[in-house]
Length: 495
Length: 88
Image 1 (tube, chains in turn yellow, red):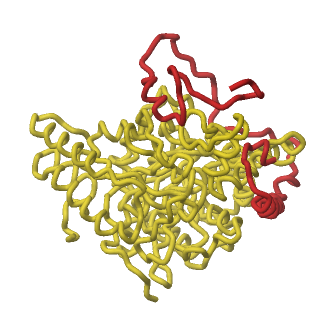
Image 2: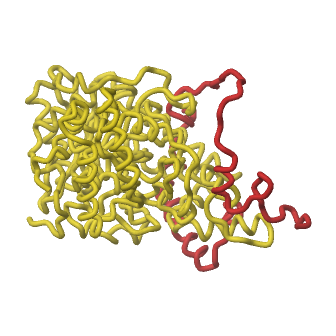
Image 3: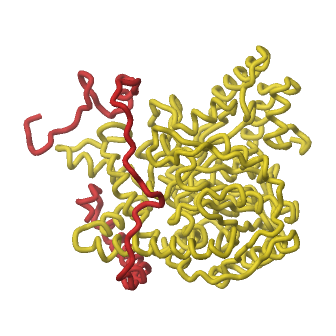
């Protein structure tokens, strides 16, 4: 498990070594699987490890190289997928009992694109049930532990994917972000997490939570790796009518262009709402950009604080409608009953965990006759106000800067007693989901316990290029010890 | 509400949910009281338009593979318990 292993040298180095025949995908996949085997006893990043399939994919990549063919931009790169992405022939659970044994009859578009790019799918990662949560504690199959400190959560809902990268199993992984579910666990695990513009990446084959907010994105040890991973999945898809009909962006080439002359706004409204270490990291990030030639200013956007309450009406409303499909008829669990309605009710009560039930009930209430205008209607208007506030900020700034999370990784059980405590984890990430704008979390500091702290770069719609250039500058300015991988999980941290 | 959501919950579960939902509604009360006279609602971040495609036969999922994932099927169809009190 030496740090000089090809597995730790990044996606570009791996793909290049595999494409030229300098290294074999078959060897690399064994190394990744050995790390998984050693780490999983403690971490539980994976819901399912697909060792045999990863080996077969590696053989196919090596055979293609042998025939003189190009296996693709992710040739031989071991990856992990959040277990809410449909994989043909491999069980896809959404970390829910209702889908515990479900085997999808098709690959999601992202999965198909990754396979054809030459990536090796090592497994399906753990999440909060149906992506509802911020710690993986809502998984029906037990939580994932944070490799930086196994007494702490990895964040969520894509906590298995962020921890798999932080543990050094894979250089990149994929998750989905509905209210922060990529950026928050990236911040808590010391890795980079990209939430693209809504519509940049097809949602076909992503199990729906809140369809107007859900977006698939990537995790990486570095900005460059996460960017290459994002490029591999981006682009229009006729199977998703909300995917943007534009060519996939080319981003890796401009990553190094710097921030000279860029106008950066530090959103000050979050700063007194978050832990001192998180506020300090974003202020320090602004200073780092300033010394690299950007013009930074503080900006107050009070509408940002409308995001959380609006989201906790809109997302459950959409979820209550999306999850109506789990009725015990076409797939998943069925608990029998004397008639169809009894069967539906028993199946859903047995199959859904407490948080999913809670959200279905909130959403059903917010959409019900008599309350629709007061809650859902008003939340949709708050969404308009959030978008207008962003639009006016982007007249003055090229990108915005904010903390990613209100705190570094917290302990298991710390926020499970009161659901609203957990919901507050999404405070700084939700506005970008409401607006559909891209945002990225970059590791930028360590707190007093040695835990990683991320900062967030936000950009206007389709602004990934400038956003990632800023992220690359922040990465270069950050201390190297604030990012993963942590090879060999740590059981506690030291002040 | 639980019946509308097709969740067959016990009385204890319903009582716990009732308290949690009240707390949450208090928390989002700011949204209910927001001044929004001239503000249009936003349902979606993109300006959505209908997407059409030519009405052509194309490959779709394998029926047997789809039915294999169902809790019960018969003669190429999903099998469900009686609806609306019809005879089984």
